[in-house]
Amino acid sequence: MKASTIFTTLAAVLPAFAVPTARSTGDSFGGLAIHSGSPIHLSAINANGNSFWLNKETTSYCPNTTVTSCPEGKYTYFTNGNNTLSLSVEVPGGQRVYVAADGSLGYTIPHGSVSGSQNVSYTGFNLRDSGIHLQYKGADWLAVPVGGAYKVYAAAAQNAPQNGTSFAFRVQTVNATFGAWEY
Ligand SMILES: *[C@@H]1O[C@H](CO)[C@@H](O)[C@H](O)[C@H]1NC(C)=O
Ligand SMILES: *[C@@H]1O[C@H](CO)[C@@H](O)[C@H](O)[C@H]1NC(C)=O
Ligand SMILES: *[C@@H]1O[C@H](CO)[C@@H](O)[C@H](O)[C@H]1NC(C)=O
Ligand SMILES: *[C@@H]1O[C@H](CO)[C@@H](O)[C@H](O)[C@H]1NC(C)=O
Ligand SMILES: *[C@@H]1O[C@H](CO)[C@@H](O)[C@H](O)[C@H]1NC(C)=O
Image (cartoon, rainbow, N blue to C red):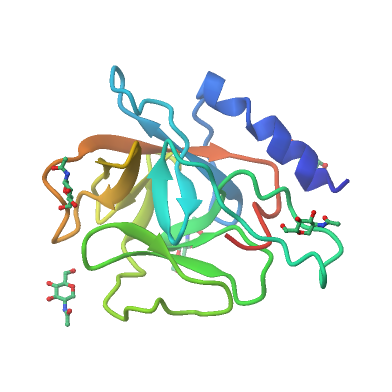
């Protein structure tokens, strides 16, 4: 078992504490939605189907016919957040996070540096408050109910929906090199 697997398991209990941890870019971090008194409070921000969600499991993939060992892939981890943002993945080429034209937060397919739609924004992400909050263009996020889960939108996006619940993205530092082979 890789050390990263042990720590991703440990990370599962971190939301219960929700202790803010200052961090610098380069480390992996998870995201928790913060909106006290709302149903989304302390929900993990998870990658699933090239979008991000609350109340929906992380989906990831390990090509276990060609790779001998993968990170657990059960949790969604990000990296950087200094203007650009990526998923914390082992796959060559990585996976970049973007804000789509409809305002939703998305991520590129593995091996591809651009999304299917070219009209997306890869820049404008920033860590604030000594690295404990992630924002996009200086604003927080919206959770829009979709089929029992909540889809994540950037509040500062031009076409962000009007019907979302606002939340802050609380950075949760994890001691893991990667979150998954690929999401
Ligand atoms: C953020 O990016 C800028 C420009 O690339 C760089 O000068 C700065 O050191 C970076 N900050 C951190 C915390 O990595
Ligand atoms: C390989 O991955 C497939 C699909 O995720 C899974 O069903 C299978 O159990 C895995 N095999 C091993 C040896 O991990
Ligand atoms: C690109 O997205 C922006 C919203 O972010 C929209 O206003 C613009 O019309 C889009 N451009 C194209 C060519 O689709
Ligand atoms: C909320 O807004 C989104 C995006 O505009 C839309 O797809 C969805 O149907 C809306 N949901 C409700 C409950 O109004
Ligand atoms: C992170 O894990 C490595 C490898 O197990 C360990 O040496 C290091 O002390 C850990 N760092 C923290 C901050 O827990």
